[in-house]
Image (cartoon, rainbow, N blue to C red; front, side, top):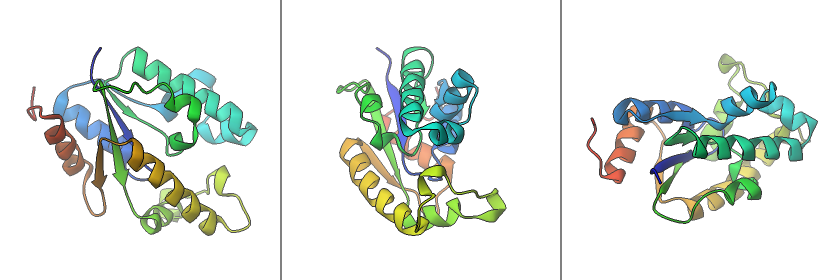
Length: 178
């Protein structure tokens, strides 16, 4: 089985950009669960979640299975993967998969989520009476879950995707250029 790098972390932690930077260094195929979900269903992850959490999670599980089985050695997962038990069961418990957690503070993630310059629109799971409080509680709970799964946790504050990708490459003990 091929080695797979699964990049996890909260919404707006830089997972997709880091996966692309890692792809440039290693030359491996990369994929994004959110993009695959949209291709497979014709609906954005936001729309799927608004239909129901169950529909969203089933689509996320199918997307992850597809990426792991077909093409990709670098996978950028959605921020809520930690809450999807069925998808997490797909992860082999061996050395063929390296799980990387991109650690960003809850405050930084919140600022990015609400940044109007980014075209901010709260994700459906934060449409609560107190979105900020909901975000911070989710962030803390998911961070614990991701850290427990991760082989490598990387603090990402004020670091570029290229710097993060280089750290992943060093962890893999691979040369920067194949």
